[in-house]
Structures are given as structure tokens and as C-alpha cells.
Amino acid sequence: MPRWIATLSASALLVTAGTALSQNAGPNDAQIAHIAYTAGAIDIAAGRQALAKSHNAVVRGFAEEMVRDHAAVNDKALALVKRLGVAPEANATSTALSADAQKKHDELDRLNGAAFDRAYIANEIAFHRTVNDALRGTLIPSTRNGELKSLLQTGLTLFSEHQAHAENLAADVK
Image (cartoon, rainbow, N blue to C red):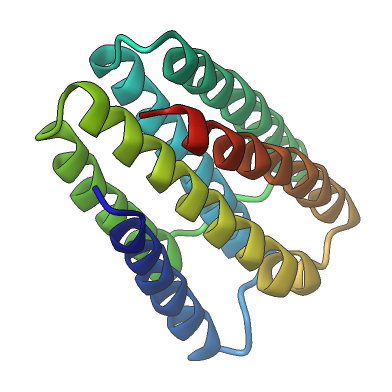
């Protein structure tokens, strides 16, 4: 899949997320927790899809890293919201993320071999760019709880590394 399609898809996702958030005064902590958890779950599912479809050792290693790291962050988020007594709140942004992710999953499912590998890595670049921009621009600044904010900042650092890793892999995955 050409890189511009993945970028366009991620841009549409960001516009959808930004529009949904801007219609309100901004997300509350329960909504932010749901958005962050949803984004992590999406990348875990994408990593599992890559593990099921790819035979490329580099792609599989990256996918394993995505599953491991995003599961660890989601586990920490669940423990935090449980300890704080906060129930993550579904919202238009998390719903849009899930719907867009299902479309992308279906697109990737139709691909095999090198075409899948290239499309998966391109999607990972676009998805991490989108999530990192949302964390930086909306989610972290809107978070009121210090512990949740700290977890999101840690996630942003890790997910920025994921984005850079995927960008480096893109040149090698042919």
C-alpha cells in the first residue's frame, strides 16, 4: 500500500479525533483514559495481526515489541484507573478510533507477503504519528490527574520511540 494512503488514513483519524474532542470543552480524564487505552488496544491487535500474517523476522520482531509495550502500558493504565476509582468513559474519539482501526485491519487482512509487511509498517508510522500528536496536543494538556498525566507522558516517550523504529524499518521492509 502506498505510504500516502496510510498517511491519509491517519490524517483522517486525527481530524475525526480532533473534531470529536473540539465539540466539547475537551476530554475529561475518564475519556482520556478510554482514548489512550483504545489506542493501545488497537496497536496490540495490529501487532497480533502482523504476527499471524508476516513471515518477515524484522516485521515480526517489531510486532512483538508493539504487543508487549502497548499491553504493558494498558495494564498500567487499568491499574491506575482502578486504584483511582475512575471508569474509563467511551466517547466519540475512542469510537472513531475503533471504527477506523477495524477498516484498517480489514484492508491489511487482504494483503500478504511483502505487500502486507510494507502496509503494516506504513500504518504503524501513521498511527504512532497520529497518537503521539494527540497525546502531545490534546490528551496530556487536558489531563487533570497528575498520575494519569505522568503515565501519558511516559507513553508518549515510548510511542515516539516506536514511531522512530517503524520509520527506520520502512526503508528495510521491501
